[in-house]
Length: 630
Image 1 (cartoon, rainbow, N blue to C red):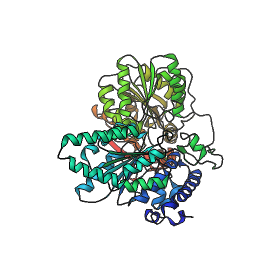
Image 2: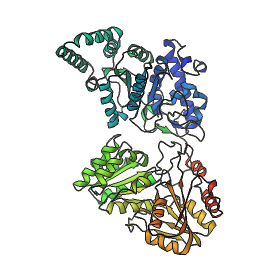
Image 3: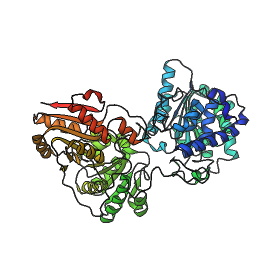
Image 4: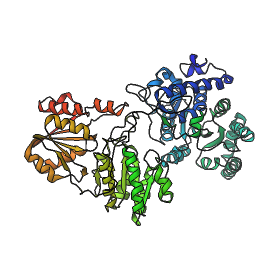
């Protein structure tokens, strides 16, 4: 086995280039076996396998810099860089992160998780090397999906202007290998990347620099020639890059030859590599979306094992998906918008039933929000389905284009709070904090599946910006009713009456709150609204209790608890307040239950923190923020 002798990239370079196809086969088999037994991202890594091997074979990592975009495809990178034996721990508590991470390995040059950052980051590294007089190569690997985001083109535009040595590899896996990726195209790409052509090009640039008119003419002639042979080249050449490709991304020997040819060309380069998601595993080739991220599965059949015992309880995402279809049937003006998260946000059925009212704008969160604003201006009723962690990327548009104009846009915010194995890059811990400070916004946090449906309906009836934020996964099992009723804006409800302590719940931790409230004989209130909060209800609770506990699956700083504190301060009310939520830290990947245990937001953890606070021993809990209002 060739793989047994490869512990790090230096060992890889000991192989003859003719051995690389066999080595790639071994890596593919190892990756399939590992992910089938532990779960994780699969299709993207299979597609980028030969490219990853070629890059580590040609370049001197970690001295040379490799930055992966998003990082779903980086499992092979981890395998080649000393983490093969840990691959089975990926996305598990205390195991490997599902994405490249600087703290994890010297080979992970940039921490990623969100899309379209790689070109900006690698340009920064290339410039840092230039400023420090360090000779190194800088390579960004970005997928065609990530190239739909404006940030990628901002970076390309800047890089082409600066004219520094760097390579952008486009991993194009959303198209079949077209006819021009044949013998002629392969020959021309190798020719154009060869040393003779490169030397001739460089010498011509020096000679023609003295005659600007001829230089411009030569440059245009080169661009037009490439454009006729390889139409994709024109855009990137215009931005200041030398374009190579398209290249078959599964021909590892050819990839090595091309990379060796262009390695020392000292200017911005763009290599277009065509790959197939799921390459080498038939089920993943046929359905790369299904095999993008998988649970444990049978390697022979491809059948995934359920992550938990099957039950009929819908996930919050499914509740939204059903509501948006039902609402669209009632109102012809409803438009659904998502930034490349059709499956994740629950819009598959809607996209099929109402294709003329469904817009997937690709990875372009800023555009999604302003598109919704434009629609709202002229009488449509847009619903933006988006993950909490991705809405952060459109914050200016949310404020400037929607809220400032007081437009009726509904934000259905999925994956609020901790999200489990995807870790801190995908956690939605901050939306209550960044939403409630925006004027004109109404912000709701449901405690059950049915309440989520009713809140979505309530949001849709308002003539202002509204947000309903809900967690990943299943709720507590309160089946959504077919009927839809509007909830009184800014009104909470008392679920249980007790003595001395009032627990104010904001969001989905209802089971945990009920456990703690029952053990303490405390009053339990489902606040429902983070903005506006129910100040009348809080006044009543203050008059009959000595301790107010706020509970939320959001960052403590600036969250729902802070809203309660601010109100109490504004009225000079004297009472002890304990804010429970997500601490001022990044919570590492683990199951969501393990994360909640870690930060004290399980039922027992909440109970313990309240008792510790009552005993005056609050310093033992990192997720407690104590506010004594006077």
